[in-house]
Image (cartoon, rainbow, N blue to C red; front, side, top):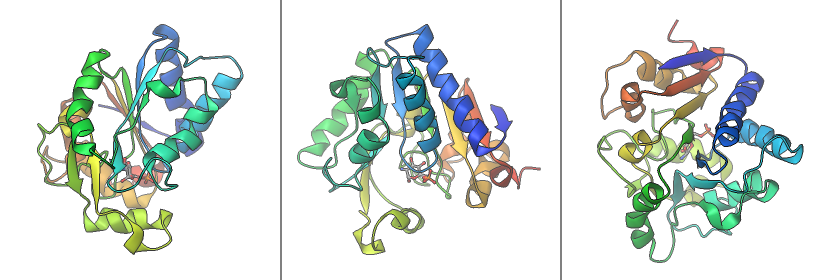
Length: 240
Ligand code: GLP
């Protein structure tokens, strides 16, 4: 695993460059996107590069990691809504080529087809990940089997608490989500993970130094051949 320690501004630029380089090399690249506050700066850089004509996403396909169960795509806290506003509506990617798991209606059907859909377009070329304070990636909470594909999961109480900052009250945070599994994520050809702040320090320590255990979902990334972890000093503080 490659580790880059730098400021948030610098990692936003560097990670955006990894995506831009990929799309320049492969204009129909399959891009894996994440929600949360961590990737927002990267998305701003991608929007800027697209508007300046440095890169075009018109032939790209994208897959998002996860979605809350019970929130339709027009709900302001849904991950579809988040992605539309944070990125898709601002770049030239075709909306019909942007996939976010559904958490409403017959979502079990879509969930079962999600990995086949990814494989059908040749797999994810580059996947961005944030990380939860408990070491979750996407919504794969501690205890998730390493061989999991896209599935429904119950959110850990700590995740509900962490994510409640984006809702008006903790009672509004959905208790379940549809998430790509750890195996789905491990099948991405290239992975970049970004982490900032002291509340990620324990998870980053486990990711870089700890044993590979289902109790720390991110630890499986140690087995992936092409992962770069971007951390700020705070997130890296327990490793030193
Ligand atoms: C949610 C998402 C994760 C994300 C995490 C961290 O739980 N499902 O994909 O990595 O939040 O969010 P943030 O980047 O806001 O700290």
